[in-house]
Length: 204
Image (cartoon, rainbow, N blue to C red; front, top):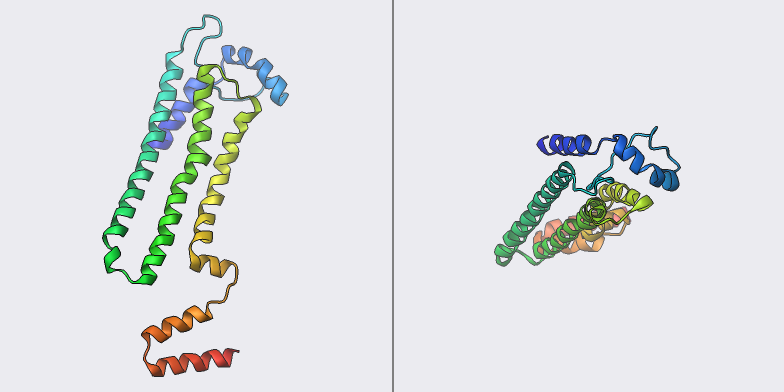
């Protein structure tokens, strides 16, 4: 809630459209989106006063705070990922081959899910914030940040579905009969093996 409230306040008040922004962005919005800046609602960072070319402290502080929040959130992701890897390695000697294989799949999933927000959240939003500071106009490309943000929730569970074998087998309807029989034969007594074999024959 704290991050949501402070981010909203930092976004709204320093970037709310005023007369200076409406005049400055009129041509850009009209050319790119065919939108009248004097009639549309929008939020825009403006790091320099277009008349005096002086830096605007409120915009710089807003950008610095957003960058700080993004850095903190990403640092937490990296820290938790490292701790998970550390725990898995410390207990690797006490794991069976099957458990090690599952942990390997989970680690690959965790690694890709850690990198995914870098390309779908932090980099697009970071470019949206930083590039205008150097006078680089993004134009219609600024919409890509919102598109990537919407793509992230769909891709995140998809990584786990494709990389974790049990999930993948279920989604693609792959047979697990051989795996099931192997697991029973390694752990169950002969009477249980005979019973499982009879059930499989009946199903066939």
